[in-house]
Amino acid sequence: MKYIRVKWKHTTNIDPIWIYSEIDNEQWEHRKVEIFLDGRKGFADKFEQIGGSQLGLEPWPDLVKLGSEPEFEIAEISKEDFEKIWNIRKI
Image 1 (tube, rainbow, N blue to C red):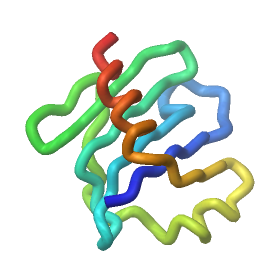
Image 2 (image 1 turned 180 degrees about the horizontal axis):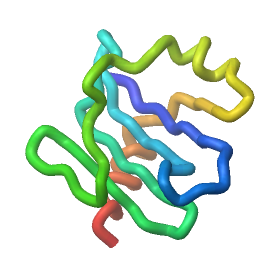
Image 3 (image 1 turned 180 degrees about the vertical axis):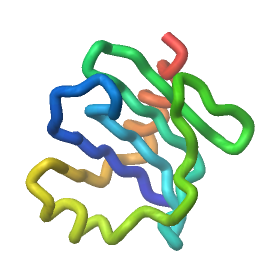
Image 4 (image 1 turned 30 degrees about the vertical axis):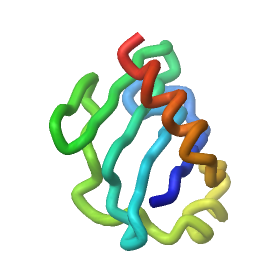
C-alpha cells in the first residue's frame, strides 16, 4: 500500500480541496478521506461511504502525470500520517 495526499486548488465547495487516499500497487483505492473548503469531511472504505465520498471506480491515474497539472499538489505520506487523518475523519 501507499498513501497519498492531494491538494486540489479550487474555490468551490462541490469538490474536496484535500484528498487522502490509501492505494494499492495497481492504484486502486482502499480508503479515502476528503476535506472540503467549508471544513466538511467525507470518507469511504469498502464498508461505508459518508459525506458524498466514495472509492474510485477506476484506478488512480499516474501520480507523476497528475502532479504535473497546475491545480494539483501530490505527495506520498507515511501510513502513520494517513492513519492520523483516518482516525479523526468523523470529528
